[in-house]
Amino acid sequence: MEIHELDRLGDEIAELSAHLEAATAHLLDLIREFDARAGWNTGFRSCAAWLAWRVGLDPGAARERVRVAHALGTLPLLARTLARGELSYAKVRALTRVATPETEERLLALGRAGTAAHVERIVRGWRRVDRQAEARETARRHASRALHVYQDDDGMVVLRGRLAPEVGALLVQGLAAAREALYQRSREKDSDTRTGRTFPRKRPSAWRATRAGW
Image (cartoon, rainbow, N blue to C red; front, side):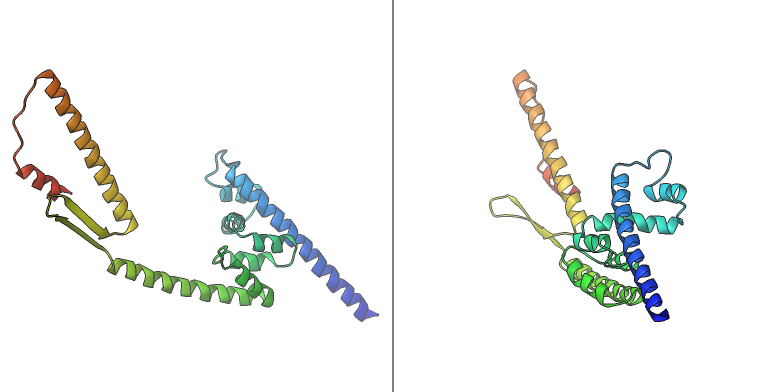
């Protein structure tokens, strides 16, 4: 009789826990929408700061709630599993640190198979591998950088290169600014020609100076 009663208590604990996880999933949906609509922007620095005040969460826990809420917006499998109470918030919180839409199915299987502590260890290892892969990719991209500028046989200037995104963006901005300056100079020249004004020709060295400035 006592064993039957303990089994009933155990089942009730598991069922109530599933309901709590489902409620947490709904809470995270609300937090994501509240943050997206800047409902916290009434004197608070962030949604996490508002949560810490309104709900009484620890600031670190509040930041994690907001992070997980946004992560689940792009991870439908994990979001549905939490909403059904099939996976604990502790596991989902850990998995969202590394999960992507491409990897969440595999990570979900790992989450189902192990304890929360086991999932935390897997995530730490996964992040370590990701950092190593990112470091190798950064080194490869750094080694492949190059920029070649030369004058072709017909006098045209040829640029060929491979640049880091931020450097490439600066180069594009510089070229756009130079093109706009040349366009404005051409318009002023046309206007001067129509009004009869003349100016001395620039020396050939002007192109070389402009090229060096780029």
